[in-house]
Length: 342
Image (cartoon, rainbow, N blue to C red):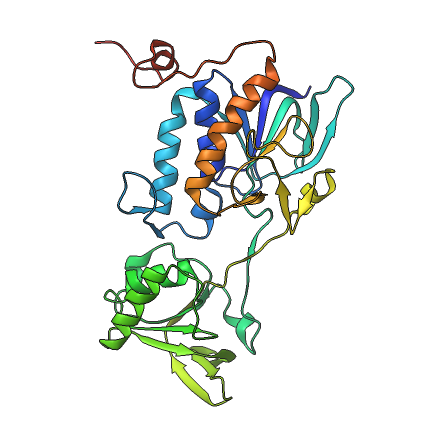
């Protein structure tokens, strides 16, 4: 028999986890489905040790720590997770509810669906240079999981976005040497991070190079580094023990693109009142949605999840008046959070 529930959340990243919390405050239970075998989405899979600086009340917090704290926060609501399976089929039934099926055959009968799938079925953009495939997963990596193991190593970081810059700044004084390679002089990351990186480069704390990777170098099968070319075509050999690639993700909506939703540039269009899609009862929060002024920030996903939760409550019970209650003072909220009165 299908699992009958008020809400199925597709995606167990930060936005999906906080969505569980906001629904729980309104006494709405959720089932969460994710194609990855672990909870955490992109944060847990690709950037577990990445420092994040724009979460309120946390001057800095690691990506995995953020996931761990979100899991602690939603514990009172006992969400049910269905991991290592992707939703391949979503159809509206005659009664207005939704039938969902996953790759493992799990079936759901849901009143509403919230898509919090990040960039969809994402894969890191990989090096396509000569010999790169021979060292993929050995000396060429697309995430950093144990930064402490890099002590004393010569490393190369590829990329010009926030992840590349954050790791460059974080690791420059922990490794033997660090070279940041970006294809052009302009960076996509936060201006403050670019400024800090430039200052470190000027002091000789790291090396900065603008160019393209031409070849992965090796001696008799032993990784040696990269051959890179500058804008004028002049090549240089940069030796290293390991290379970390932060060229972003190649987004692919996968089955989501076939669900009849309005899609704009591989993102799901939503309104800014309910974060509802073009289909009534289906909502989208986090990086997978788009609307005028959209900013792809974890903070934005949290805001969207809060409003989506109230919209789900209204969808489930249109005639019920919705009152905003504060977790600080509401006895009802305290009860739902499992708090006890002293």
